[in-house]
Image (tube, rainbow, N blue to C red):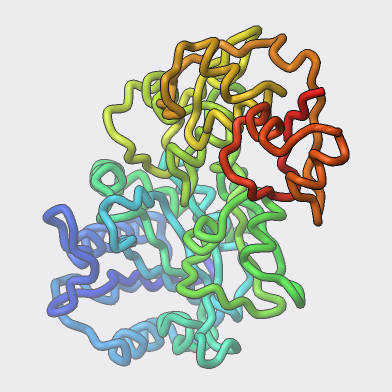
Length: 404
């Protein structure tokens, strides 16, 4: 005989459609999932109650009342509220399942459910708790906050406004429900669901932490952490547990997996290549990226191999000349250039002997062209010509070519 009971909730309903996208209303898919879940618990002999079996409007108060009336206010009662997520933007690329559990409960059930969904083939994001901003001692969601001592979890199966994720849910919802049902039973029997990759790691917020400092520590982005933890602001509280994405930000070998906040320009700069080179290597016709997209990274387009250099975004003749210890005029002469304009992907010939008879000087605080010219017994114009500059303004760290 089982010593637990299950309450199955189909989120939203009636006049409350929930999220709507791609011709689907969340309330309908929630009900489809909840009905099948109810049948599966019944088939396994688990005491189970379905909160709504039709498309009816239920207020938060009435929903809570039905939950508590099913088997009483009891910690042996597991409440599963079924939902479909929404990012609010069809172009965000957000996908995958999440599980939210109450502050009064540990993470065992939520973790097992998410790992079971991953084993069933769904993309998984994270499991977490969410606090009420006005009172962080309380749960954000009423299904957690007002359901006594029961064990409630909200299962978000994926994103309704991501067509790929929505299709995956519609085609596989029975498989996902079976995974959730088995995870609940396994948890009550003290079993552990084998871990699936990509669920992230956790971090406990300490005094002085910020989302920016945490993101930098784990080589990820503020937006990626906010998305994974369903945060709507940058505010953190000491002791708050954050899930940290660990697998979306890695560039392994010649591939890179796109994470939140990435652009072709930022990736090109990270790998010292060009936007066009990445687009060509991946047969991309536009600049739009989606989170989780795997890109092939060309490894040779950005290198100055021998006497050639391929121009990348942000380059100028001045920056290239300084990199190779030569001059703007020398590069222009070697490439028959009549202007200083460059195009991304353009291959330049780099002269390797133009700096013979010259030395370089790195500008320090207080320097001027006049003081440097006096130091090296030359003229301001001679330094400007050798260094390919037209202004007398200098910046600290700038490298000048000094004619001997």
